Amino acid sequence: MNRPFTGRHMALVLVGFFGTIIAVNVVMARYAASTFGGIVVENSYVASQHFNKWLDDAEAERALGWDAVTAWRPDGRLLVTLKGPGEEASVAGVARHPLGRLPDRALRFEAIGEGRYLSHEAVPEGRWTLRLAVADGAQRWRREEALQ
Image 1 (tube, rainbow, N blue to C red):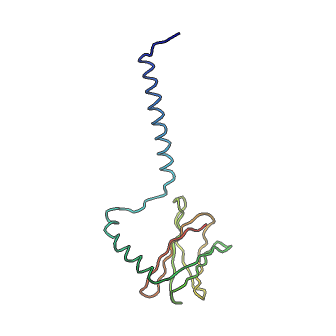
Image 2 (image 1 turned 45 degrees about the vertical axis):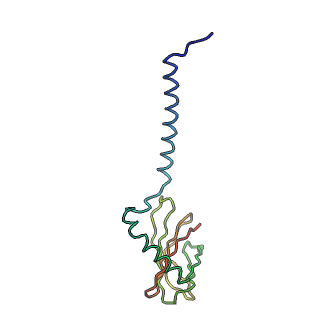
Image 3 (image 1 turned 135 degrees about the vertical axis):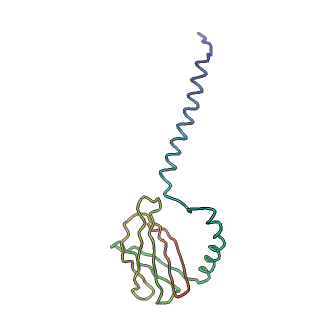
């Protein structure tokens, strides 16, 4: 038995088609909003005005030839071994959760000799991004690395 294709059938096809598209968009938007942990920069125009200076600073830091090796100790503290700066260097850091689900943790480091620095604060297990800042006199050096 042949039924004619009516306006009601066309309405159901359109509602089904656009309903599927809208449902997929809502699901994807929720996933995107729940997995992005924060702002890359506060104001992209202001950041663009400083971009060339940031490149020059990065080149000057690279020219220093400094390096760092970070190790996680069993007590949760971080041990940073520096190559390059003098014994009077100061080290500071921030541990950031890559998805922004946990608050940032400011880290203070104490020199323990032979270019090694131990954090006062423990960092919980998990994935973290460590931002190190080393100062030796007028020279500055920064590094960002993933901790796992």
